[in-house]
Length: 44
Length: 568
Image 1 (cartoon, chains in turn cyan, green):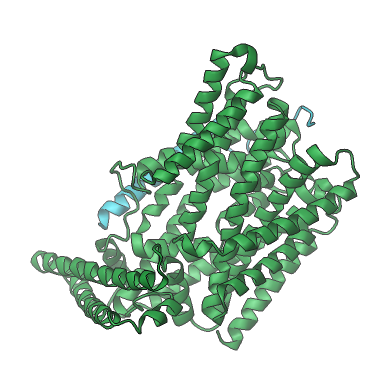
Image 2 (spheres, helix red, strand yellow):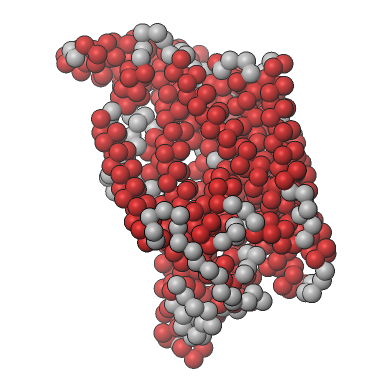
């Protein structure tokens, strides 16, 4: 049976906190989808 | 393949396998054999996770998918970053704190032994089937290149993968993945540059992109909502988020990779790297397929890319008519494409409209002729479902890439598959030994005993995967087939973990019954056959959560059980 233990949760090496990293990834996703959308529109 | 291709192929494969085995020395305990002693850096895990998905199927099937259906398959990855964020914030720290070897080990801590056993069995069914498809993909390569029967090549590849996996363990798998990803990126760029160089001198790169778009091959985003449409932005954002939550949160073949990390932060970074890199990579691979399509606008492709089947139907009385219509349509499309590119460059509106209509009309005639040829193959075999999608890219590689590069691309395809297969088989063996054998049949044995059991389990699952691989050719596009098989089981697994993390009052029996109901709902939907597979994950997950909560609400005395684990 696995046991619970304390595992240190260190901050990311950039942007200061994991929450900021997640927000950055969301902004990136929105940008990628928009870029793909306009790419598809430009060449349809 | 010429002598230089064989030299490049053999040298690449031997060096990759040897490097992986070299880095895996000392994997003689369960912790080292299954979790690499938790010593892996984030970039190794990140590339290993990516390599698992970027198997031979990525090269063979995705490019073919783009050739016949355009780039809209990329939308199936829009949910990946969303899923990765959720997993990083919730699943990763919980698994680390629970010190588990497998994701399902955690379920016993949270629920009970029968829930862990059911989740393990569902994973073994699903991943066992997928492992067969992964081995089948390179067998196609060898069949096309060497002319061997697919069954023989499947067995050859399977035997190689089994040997490599049994000896190396997770460490060998991960480090060979790192090396392979470098080779894969190199191979991708060379393939794209080559196809662009091979275009006629009068057709620029800009013309090629425009012609691909005019034929509907750059349809990267489609916004229409349709339950039957496999790939649109809605199924991509919603359905694929559930698929990737299941894949990276509940599938041991992925969980095991990020459990090898030195810390929670290293595991999170490996997943977020994939969240950022995977969509552009998939876009890039699909774009290569679109460029191969443009190449074949100017060089007449075979009516069907599966040469053996094409040879069989050439004797049919109808075939001559099909071939004539195909040839005429090709010439019409080529001429219209040249005129369209010229009109587009000149900005001649009237000529542009006329050429565009001609180009698209010729494309429809070409598609109709190909469909007729496919029908002849189906009549010849007496069964429906023929598809040559998986042969398109290989046909191009072997016919038109320069000597040496052919060997490199084939090496990439085979090495990537060996790695992906070994990772799958390794995770199947882990669940079999940790969640089934050690938990229910032989508790408290020595470390050496479990390492030996893991090697035997690896041998068993490798053999099983090879046996299942024969079914692969009946499933059409392999990349879709892998996702369909996964989606039949992922939804209920995901639902179980959602309940585990989010609803602490629900007990083991409630979620156990919920998973059975979830699987029943998924298979009922699958058999009705009128909903895209990406939605199976949503349906399965929702049914598991709903049934578990309903049972707990109706009879809390029977089904409610406070969890002893903190949730995130």
